[in-house]
Image 1 (cartoon, one colour):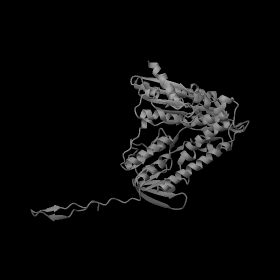
Image 2 (cartoon, one colour):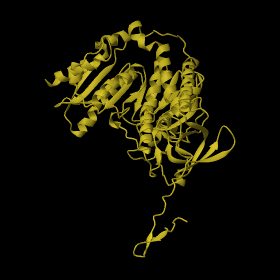
Image 3 (cartoon, rainbow, N blue to C red):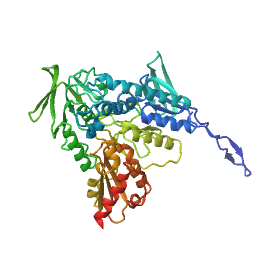
Image 4 (cartoon, rainbow, N blue to C red):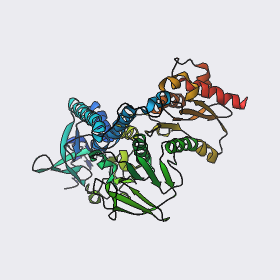
Length: 492
């Protein structure tokens, strides 16, 4: 029975008085937290939950953990980039000349050798961290039965099971978008997930999509000497990044002989014959035709939510499979959380990790602090870009009076030592109270250098801090001091 009658006992006036019913025993669950997905968000959430003394299980649909980030995304692409920069000699060309290279004939095997090593290491580290924190790991397909029950179909052995949990966290990430009218074959027409399976480097390449992934790979292949054409529907690349920084990136991409087709829509992509064998013809709605050896399709990703059984519990993802959450990363069902790429922008490994930690703390009532508006973004194009805080366009729309200060690597001794003469650091600060509002960097070490400015903004610091501070010499960090002086001089 859902309700029980309370026992009664006589009172002093002879009338019966209801005796309070005993409190129901709390339900016993198999786990306190079950996390679906072992990528950056799921991994960090699992570790945080385990550190709080909770019973935690992670369900991963593949036998290899780490998700897209470790196996086909962040780690492989950044490792490939490092191999490209080293073997091509790109960093030293400003010193030794444009023809300088460490290896004359670079092959796909040369690049993958380094990537395979890093991937294996990261998988092993991730698995070891989960094991030593007592997190139970299942290889299987997870389907939500209700808000506290997950059905599990094992992939590494036969059988099924159902497990109960106090909280569920969805961290399944995303999958690549493959329009049915495009003849993907994994060899001449492929996505970023299939890039690691290429047997050789192309002489010519079309990259469809000018987002983060498209820009990063376009720069890598161009640095290796490939003739690259980048097609993007928008009139600008990376619209969420400070426009001056993007303009600098575009300039250097063109210096690397990348052809940019901005504001262009792709009509068809099809196989064709070329002098090198089977190639790809990309036809644009403007009538242009681009014939290359291979084509990388890098337009969008969608949430990997199709097999989760969200319809069983009333959670409705959007048309791109993304799950809507509140500021605590709770879905429409409070005991079910969603974190990482599956919730949408910014879809970065770093932000996904923090989302996983924050959601785990909230689920178990632990106070936590974070500053989402100061999450740094790293774009590993060539040259590298990193940004944190507000940019000029945002401040202009908000009507906030600001000034900027810039420093160029070529004017910094460390920049000359590294051979990076194209880098730039840009500070944006309030014109009246000098409060630092944003930092935007393009050049070597940008994603490392950004954290100095991030820290100052987190503590409400002003641009004057950089003027009064002493930086090691010679370092790229000196750019902060130079940029600060440049900015202050503009308003004096």
